[in-house]
Image (cartoon, rainbow, N blue to C red):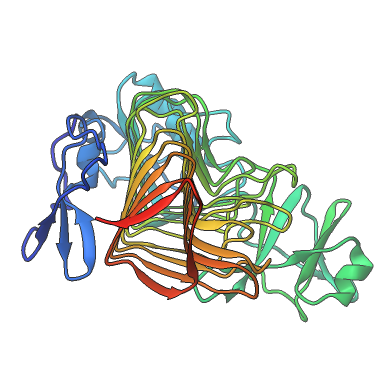
Length: 447
């Protein structure tokens, strides 16, 4: 059920309605909204806050202030935004909100939250329908410290940090605005000899960036859970939440549940598995019968996929991504890494968005019996192994590409589009680089 509108009212002026593709099979009985186009931009005519339990917006609000709050406080205020009795950690607000037995909001003052401050390393999850909102700006969460004191170790700089899984330079950004990853090497001597590298040596982490790092120049991603929700099974709304790290993903929902999950203006990045041979996605949502919708969100630098959606035996997942992105997913050694992927019988809509530069995989890959409609989306493939694929449709999946752009380059095989036994329909499909590969069981036709 869609709730009452609270802010962010859609504006309809100058937009042209766009019908769903024939045969797509979107459940309009449960998720009834229109798609429109204005210029080259597609969007859903829906207020994101309408997609979750309306009692969230009228229930209690728990306040969190990581700088001045105290977990002994009530967390309640006279009105939303009153942090005078705020808690210090997000997980303490979950515990207090759960005790009310009703849907609630967690309003988190903009700032930094680190290590186990989100769910107490997976131990304190919400039990009610909930919203987590960065209040007045970004809620920045990292499974590691935001400030590190580095000591000159002769050829490297070291800090007393244990259980480190990935290390990034915050002072050097990729063209997409991501932290630049340092290369893990075997020992301290190799680190000293290798620019832009790191190594764990007992209780110390060493880095070599060619000089002394500033206290906020290095993101040390440690072996903590990120925004991980294994048992929560009710509606969940996130806004202005920016999570870095997580051994099971930066954002991970796993419970069998009939509910909606919604994110607005969030980023989920740098997932770092405790076991490097079992890499995890930046965002993974499984076994959810309902609508999973993200607006203006990013899932990048995941250890495996960026956005990953699986029914895994619980039918009914519908996915809507509007103006979302997924860049540079896949760590060294990971295979079949994608910027966006759907599995099983998931129904998915991609409106706009950019996906690209994944390692050893495909940028947009739809698999098994999923049905996915992409409108105005772009995929850029530059796989380091030389075999680049922008869009791929496998098994019995069906993919509609409407006004999408594919760009696949490299020294080996490069496919703007691959129908690997899947069925692909195109309209206004633009190929910047790469060929179109169709298996004997696959097809590519206009619609």
